[in-house]
Image (cartoon, rainbow, N blue to C red):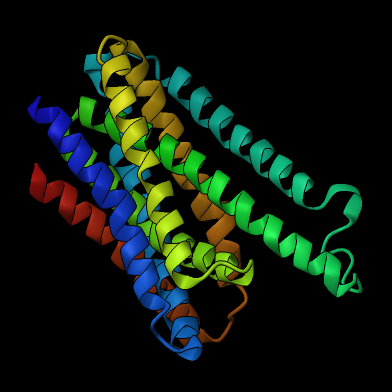
Length: 264
């Protein structure tokens, strides 16, 4: 029961904290948000890679699981490919037959408005599913080791903040008021707890799956960091900006390392 309380608590932290912090950024001016978001993204990259390579994968290779390292490597590879295909499907859904704002910049304002409204709905559905999976990953980490669970929840919160901020912007652009955008984002974040609790009762009797779930979580973190977040950093190429990015990525990684080491 104590472990379940830990899981629920950190699932709430991972979900609600990221929403609340992201929503607080909406109080800032647009110029201030434009300055803050890239810094958050860089820090999140370090946290995601640190949690994956310093926490999740090493724990999946723990001798107590008696798992073949080649199976872990194969699972990691399949996980990365699966997230690639999943993102392709999402992009295909948004740009079916190349008719979207990216491919068709001269589309009418009416079409643009309809797409904006649809984007808001899709964001909420996609975010709910994403948070549900995050809950499963948090539980899998806690069932392996309490310290790993805390580190995983913190890494999830770190990468959710810039994502939630982006979600808020899209919802506002879709016609949601600030209050409605906050309400629906909080509602969506609660799916993290639902996924975590369901996983607790199902995974407790399926311990043999834990190392593979940990690796899938790692593949998710690595893919988000490398495929979705890092490319955006290349838009800034000045040496000072690059040094700042590297410093924040290192800070995110060191944060996870120190947290993991301290808890142990």
